[in-house]
Length: 228
Image 1: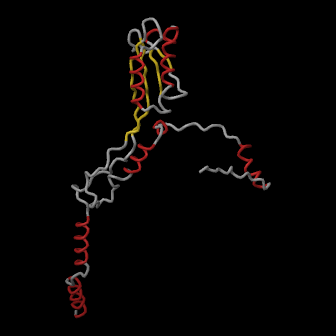
Image 2: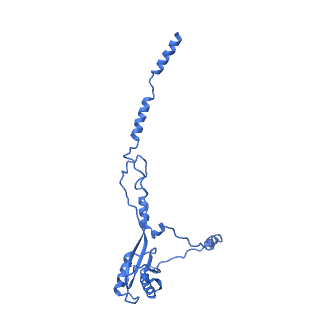
Image 3: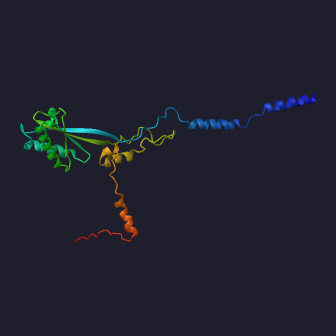
């Protein structure tokens, strides 16, 4: 009988003993709650700062003498002013709309040739393709200049505070400077759409330098002198 009372007494002492871990758990819960990101602070990751490449085209109506392919003085002046204002570059595409006659009309071909000759004064080595677009004025043709344009991203973006980022999301201005600089420096924005095809490589010509080096027949560069 005495042994049973002792066991019950030990059980009561064990159940009434306070836990040492409760204060620590309470402190941890407060810390986690304070560091947790609220719904007001949360926003999805910002879209990447990419360059937008757009195709734009500008046209200019060119009038000729009736029944001829001769440009008048005023038409040559307006055409030159149009081409000079575009700052032509190698990546531009040139089309000549000769109307509904198409490429079978000798007069349309002569007019397209006259425009191409005037065009080469501003950008040597280029030629305009002739097509029947139906947009040429009566008694003339329409020159269409098309090009790719690189549009820089709309940044910097300060829609979200830069100092508070509890969600560790990508910064809204990440990549802004690199994309803007590339869009302003690229010579032909068409290269951002598709790359250029590589020309065939001449392996024999490339190996000549190694052969001369091994044979101790390296050709020194030509010395350049300046006259004072």
